[in-house]
Image (cartoon, rainbow, N blue to C red; front, side):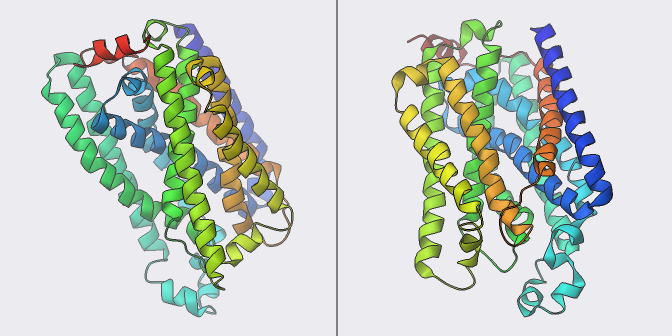
Length: 386
């Protein structure tokens, strides 16, 4: 397995360097276009470790055999969050290029932005972002430290401590990500607002994380110790959870659309009007069909959920559509009119993705791929082949 991890790191780093090199001319010739692409890529890939953190805390609170066999993968994902916070720094120096509310000349002529200036201003934005990463990084540190202590000592009290921390951590996660969703994404179009938007983004993060972790678990199940640990019942559980969170995401997306469309208010409806014309409507239709309808049909089939290879293929399709969905949500806020798109956006996503996967794979060898002394480990391993 060591050789496979080393090969995966080389491939990931090659993808990261290739993407960044492709973006370099855009950064020099069109900084605005580059930073929009960088923000899109960063928001998508920070969503994967954030989703890992949410799933990890859900597993600590609820228990379940499905979570024990992927816990180390989730923890490896969470440990990339501090580095992803550092990758936000280029955006911190380009806020006026990205956001309308960060341009004094625009705010001076817009009464609504003046009204929102007490919240949407550069110093307060940076303080909120720093606080967000400080809270999340502290959660990541303590969760990973205690699970290491459990491996070393086998103290049964650690499981209870992890459960209590995760219960409070989930509340902290929802609060921080509510502010972060408004700041990083919704404020791209500062005249528009939606109270369900942060929940929609959080649901998408969990779906992205489940897709990635399922694919990683299937690939690693070819090697010990996961080859003997992960069974069809574990895959079945993961498939059902993926199905559940795809439905949660779809529920939030439909709820937002129905509420805004039926209200037909001039400060809300333009957000959807921009995304239902100029070519964007076809992207929206593809999201409905491939992100929702296709997984809905496939994940109802028991054989697919119990087969690692088949489930991985479904997860990869959903993961790609998560990228498309986020692009549909963000890109119309970058430019008015018909859909133009740009290879820069996806080169940035490739570069950022390569760097993140490199970080993720580098974290895997730090701890054994299975918890060593979790009191429920034997029961969880037995469940896999039921």
